[in-house]
Length: 276
Image (cartoon, rainbow, N blue to C red; front, side, top):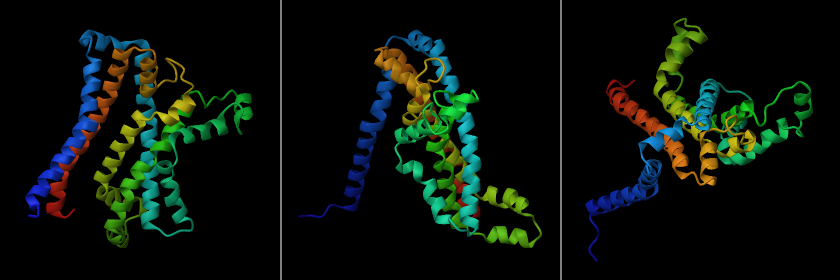
């Protein structure tokens, strides 16, 4: 049997990859936007400006606006500590950072209910002080922070390990303080990895369903994020409205990917040429 040429193998692999992407990624996106516009642009627009939909959009953006900066700070601090210092419990910290990747989001949501719910460990104290976390916005923020906090740290840790500590040590030897070294050396060296982590964290924060579904209480117009609102509309057989909101989520996800690709295309070639 005549062996397959390398060109034939390459073409077959490319076709298989494109076919997989078309079937499992491109086709579902086409279906989402097609169904959203099935009754025309007017029905599509009305579904997005409906009060409950606007409330879900505002809540989703609010939660992301809180969760992403929190995880940005945590990710930078955790990555800096892990890559630049040796300390007891370092391996445990790395394991804990990966925890949300191995724990189901539903389980994460249940944990918060068990801790902060009315019958949970802190429930009586919270009720006594008129503080509501579960089935309210704080619970949604906490759940979102939990499921998204690995993204920034996991993007930065390998990058910082690869770069080493030579630049920081040189800055310190020249008299720079720890804060100056961090702001003028460490952060500029990892700025694009940091941006990628933030983009991915933001995309996951806006699209999170499992953990948020458990802690939100599904209060329409109050604690429903966009993914939860899509589920409610779909269960009510309001398919046009459901796909309209889903298309907005899809558009935000696509925008995230486009921004990531633009940053890579704009800066990576320059960094390879300059060695920065």
